[in-house]
Amino acid sequence: MHLLYFTHLRLLKNLLLILPVSIILLGFSKSAGKTDPPLSQGEITLEKLEKMPKIDAHAHIYPLPDEEVAKFIPVLEKHNFSWITIATEGLRWHELKGQIDIAADLHARYPQRVAWITFFNLQNWGSPDWEKEAIRTIEEGFSKGALGVKVYKEIGMELKDPDGRFVMIDDPRFDPLFRYVGKKGKTVAAHIGEPRNCWLPFDSMTVEGDREYFRSHPKFHAYQHPEIPGYWAQIAARDHVLEKFPNLRIVGCHLGSLEFDVDEIARRLEKYPNFAVDMAGRVCHFQLQIREKVRNFMIKYQDRLLYGTDLMVGPYEGPFNIDKACANMDQVYHDDYRYFATDEEMESPDFPGKFRGLALHADVLKKIFHDNAVKWYPGL
Image 1 (spheres, helix red, strand yellow):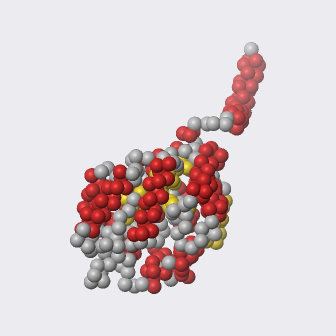
Image 2 (cartoon, rainbow, N blue to C red):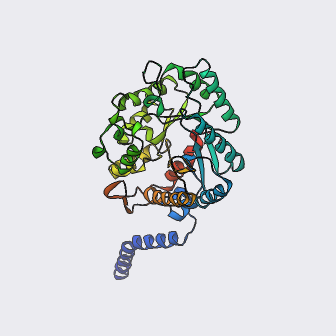
Image 3 (cartoon, rainbow, N blue to C red):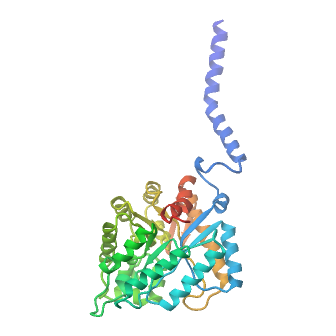
């Protein structure tokens, strides 16, 4: 009797020792056999991320002929992306009108794939009817489905009063526009200021993309133009608008021009509940920072971060090739899927060395790639 008891006891202990391994193996085999696990369960395959509905919350479409539209839309369909194309540059009113026209037209033709944000004329700044004309343009945009209004870095870095003083975004003359946008329940997309690299010499910049941009756009390279108000003056003016209009939704484009340190972004997200940021053109700055710090930031503020790329289609500066643009879209999206969804080791053309992907869970990815854009741009 005792011998039988101890024999059973030893068998039970051995079973308990191997049981966890069996459970792990069983769980692995079950998960490996599933092709469509719920998003909330954790990791997501790159294939599923590509198929998941997504929104690129910051991109640009310039006038395109129909034969090029016919190549562009299938790329969006392949990746299951919708684009928010943002009209920009009020000091180039003729070109801006072209952006507004193509955005409104494509939104009407492809409402599931193209949404848009309007802008207003700044070439007539200082004229007696400037405010009236600006609001009229915004109103026309809203009537054609625009989700919001863009304000651009030319305010603070290029626009001047007749006396030569730079006009900042918190200038009271913009207040009626902000009040109108808020009254209509729309959103302001605010690209105010530039990366901190803009105020540095080329050899001190942290990423190659910034060096390339400011070499080709020297008028915006503030290091070469000490008359332009400083980096923190640009940030302070934007923050002042957030304070003045606490009920106005504002999405800070390009990580709110605070790309160099997620702690700086977090301080604004904590202080201003009406503030979110998109990642357009600044993902490489995440990759430069400490991985776990960035990952924790993205998890903590998963409701305030919008995926965006700053990709462009159509002629903007110089010759344009639709096939190259579509191939670039495909590459950017696949690279970003890897960075956000896996922990693979990667490299970037923007800086030397290697970094690892963030391996964010599917529920976080769904918010960043889709749900937050719907939340911060009502009407999508």
